Length: 282
Image (cartoon, rainbow, N blue to C red; front, side):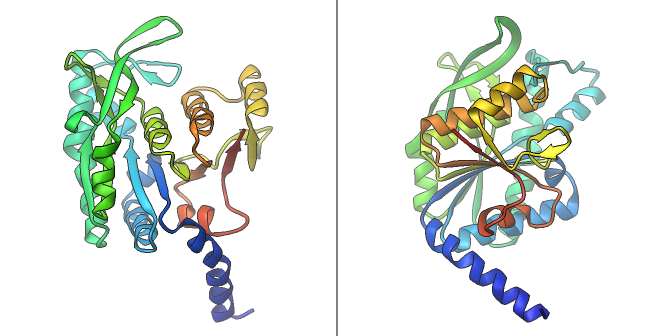
């Protein structure tokens, strides 16, 4: 098979997916190395722009955990995690806002716009996009950490209707004006659920869900419960997997977990028959 034949087959394989997803909404949780390594950042910007150009509505919810931790360390602020959630006092929530909304969000928007992706950066506080309440982890107080109770869908739809790509910094605001740190995976899940998105894609530094050193290509909810019980799904993967199944119950069609370090992994997962990560199903 020569190179032109290979490219032709790739395009033919992609065509039915392009037809199927035109006009649909995808929510992409963007994090890990793909968000910090220069080449991967540029590649991600091109990939989401391609998706938008072929008629898919793209909403991005980004993380920034490593940079938050690094910045907090430089400022002499200790970092603690409880079951994948960052313990957040007033000093830490200030760092979260500074890093996510002040730096990372604008870097992502700038890269996408350099590729003519027409994106706009917003946070959960803007026009009360993400209304949150204080979150307790198994009854434990972990500070100014919130869980989302409402998403301002008309506000998001305004951007999508005008062919803009929202890039969301994930923190929420309480009805009393308190600003909460919100786990980016859970924020992406809440946004996808509220939008009834076609897909929710978690782009991170892992291939997907790994069990017995093997990639689980399709993970059912029952199998996930077993892996929780065995401690195979642990740490930061706990809120990710739990939020994935909550979105499926809320009406999101499919959830994918893919490795953002792989070249064009987002396009390969969406536009090829085989895919490359873990697909989660009820």
